[in-house]
Structures are given as structure tokens and as C-alpha cells.
Image (cartoon, rainbow, N blue to C red; front, top):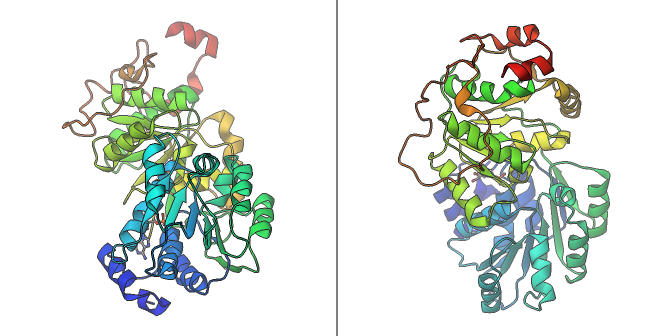
Length: 436
Ligand code: AMP
């Protein structure tokens, strides 16, 4: 099947060809004709399936060429990154159509957003909180919206946006087209769909709650204290002896943990930077840019970054800590193996995370291979530090620095310990602490 078989107009086909897409992905094959009919659509599509184009392309077509002062399309998305990416895609796909879109999200000055709204636009792409602020200030008028999109609706509910979404929906004309995209279907999602969608066409491309089959998943069982040393080893040698990693997205549970790990990796000679909700928008954009351009090898991220990051050919994702919610695992690993590429997800599982691993396997109805623990050194250069992780600055040096002595043993420790054997021989925690 070709894009031209989907009923898309010439201007859009040209833009798609320029993007280098040959074949529509399954979600695009099903959702594009459905959205073009003007009916409501409920789509179950995981991230990385090409779902953005699946709603942006037909919306651009339905917008036509007419320019009005007030926006006719509203896309709500959970994070700044995803919002920026949707806007970026809309700009590329709408290149030959001259569609004006305005991007609205928090964490940055609202002035330019207000100015853009005042100039008039066809499409607003926003996170719910900031959009409501602007509505309350009388700067955003949603009374002419013809199409509403809730992208990653499950994530928006997880992030507590339900009240903001309900308030926004009350401001929209009752007669409109509504599209809802969600990777998972909880009871809450079903209720929201019932509330906002009228007789929707349902499009489901992947079995619910299963993960992208193309992601090669494996896990290491490792003591919590040894995780950072193992991670350094993986960056230097690979997870399956394939050689050093040049790029990996590493997930931690906390912002503090992300900062600390980024610094530990950096200390060990692996260029790293952290991305999380406490960072300013400028710092987040810079971190992502540094990662995309290869200035840093490790992007250490919290959950908030697991949606909306679109990094071409990202080879691997590391779960430094498993997420508490199994669905988050699916989203995290969905950052790799996007749009036909293959990828790998490596999880470091401490004994107290064994239950989380089982929950994830149950949710996916799929088991994750436990890989034998490689021999890795305990590196002193990655010792914890109380100083925060440095912000990534453009650097000309390679992403993986030659470590000064990555295999230097800890005092009193063997130089090439087999960590698995070592952990079995370990003395009790209290005496270990004293010996450090
Ligand atoms: P998404 O799921 O919308 O975040 O898209 C994931 C990635 O797939 C993005 O990098 C898109 O540019 C890319 N993509 C979308 N549609 C296609 C297609 N038909 N062929 C190849 N790549 C695509």
C-alpha cells in the first residue's frame, strides 16, 4: 500500500516523499482514512508506530487552505517534548500547505505564545496546564475548534491532567471531531473515551498492553550497589560483547538519581547528561540536542522523558531502575525500535525489583531473557559525588572518553571480579560498609 492509496492530497504526498517515507505504517493505513471521514476515532497505538503522522496528515488535509483568526484544531499532549515534536511534524508535513500552528507548553515564557495566538493560527498544539492558564487570561479562544486530538491520553491521565482536560473540553464546540490516541486501555481511558467520543471508529494496531516485538529485551540480575559499575561496563564493552555503546537512553526513577548517575557516568569517562522535569526547558532541549548529535553518549532520564522523545535509530534503552507501573516499561522501551528499526532494551534488576520484573512480564505476556552477568570492575572514578550533574556543554571530545583507569579495583577488591560470584561471597552489608 502507498500513501496515495489513502486519499491524501498532492501537497501532503510531496511532503511525505521529502521525509523519505515509502509505505504507511499499520496505524497510518487504518487511521488516515478513518480521520478523513470526519468521524471520531479511538486509536490504540504504541509510541514509535508512526501515530503522529496518522492524525496530523488527515487533519492537515481537512483544514484545507482557508486561514481563520481562531484555531480550528486543538492537539493536547502530555509533555513539552511531545508537544514540540508534534508541532515539528506538523510543520514538516504541512510544508506545502502553509498551515500556521502555535505551540503552547509550560516552563517557558508565555509571551511569545500569547503573541502567536494574537496573530492568529489554524492549529494549537498544547499541554493542558499552560493552555488553561492562557484561556483563563483570555488569550486562547477555543470556540472555533473543529477537531480535538488527545495524544497519549493514558499518559495525560497518569500525569493528573484529567481535570484540566475536562475543563478544556467544556470550552469546545459540542459539534466537533474528536480523536483519542492511547497505548493502553485502563478503565479510566474507557470512561474518558465514552465521555468525549461519539460513535467512534476504533483502530487497534497492536495487541493491547504488549510491547513492540522488534525490541530485543534482556535483563541482568545485579546488586543495587553494583548497578553503576555494570552500566559503565556495558557502555565500554556492550551488553552482549558487541563493543562499546555510542548511545543509550538510561531511565532512573528519580530526578536526583538521574543527576547523580549522569555525574557518575561522566566521572567514569562516559559523556552523560540528565533530562527531567526539574530542568528548565532550555536545559532539556540542550540535553536532547547533545544526545541526538552524539556529544553525549548517555541521556539519563526520568519517566517524564519516556514519552515524546523521538530519537532516530536509538540503539538502546537501559532501565537502570525498573518502573513501578508495568505500562511505563512499555513506553520506555518504545523509545527504541521506532518505525521499523530494531533496538534493544536492557534492564538492571536488583533483588528488590524482582516482583516488578514479574509484573512487567505478566503485563506483556512475554518473558524477558536473563543474561549472564559479565565480569565487570568496580570503578572508583564513578564514586558518588554530592555535586549536581553538570549541564552538557557542546564539547568537541568523543562521547565515550578514554577512562583513566576504568578497571582500577576498589581497595581490598579483586581487580577483575566476577560480580555474580563476588556477590555470593559478599560479607553482610554492615561489614561491607566498614571495609569501603
Ligand atoms: P511516532 O510514533 O509518530 O512518534 O513516529 C515514530 C517515528 O517514525 C518518527 O521518527 C517518524 O518520523 C517516523 N515515521 C512515521 N511514519 C513513517 C513511515 N510511514 N515510514 C517511515 N518512518 C515513519
